[in-house]
Length: 142
Image (cartoon, one colour):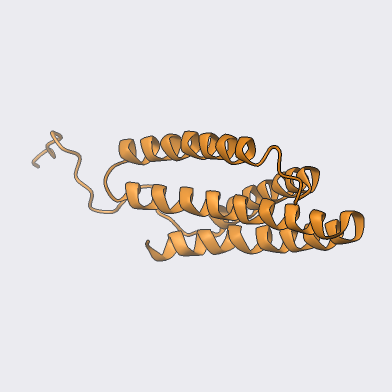
């Protein structure tokens, strides 16, 4: 990962974890231990899923923009399938509170999205690389 990728990851992860911790505390008061476990699972799921997505896209961005887009779409679909498998396999388990999980996951997703957007706005990235030569394009001689 490059420095910009790590800054972006940090900008998104910090508010996500903070929002998740607030949700865990709220879940403890509202639902007890089951709620806390559901909230922790929601926070961890969102943080891990989105961090893996950022890492995959950061790695693919070094190859080409096309591969980067494919990695973004691929990780998105893989996360959706993994989430479906996780939720279906835990459907009959009553050790955690599903509503606390869902509300925390939604809250953490919103926090991650806002943090990532703020991180992008603060990055000083060039839109065009200086000195980049377009393949097949010849400069005019004067």
